[in-house]
Image (cartoon, rainbow, N blue to C red):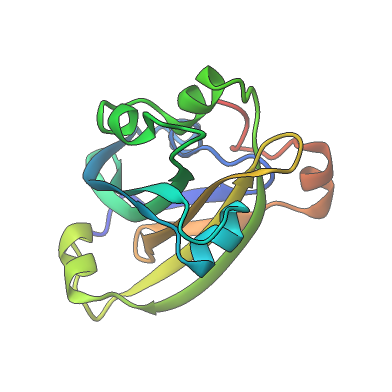
Length: 183
């Protein structure tokens, strides 16, 4: 199974996939695997500050570095706030550009949780790795400058291809995180 490239992925106040990879000389791309509009369960509603049952876009995407799969991301966005999110992501638009088109000129990572586990068989297949190899599950909430949640996701990262660099508190306070500046 594939193991290259090894990415140092920064996580901090501002974390942008394509930019983080580009800073290291890698080309970051993504592909949409599935989209649907569904209703928010308790977990999704709480993360996005919505009512249970509110309509949300559910997007499953695969992130690649130089054509090699590095993550599978399942993201959720309020359908009433971002009505064309699923269509535009499928067309290749970045989340940053879509947010900007809705008047959100900047956004921040409010919370990140990371755990490690063995890959499921379908996850391993989509990541091009053996099911016995570990993955890291990164759950995050992004907020707008007023602190309102705008995105919630859970991404499965290949532990063989990525290591995370967590920003220091000083970097988080200033918003200056090496390798994680704005797109």
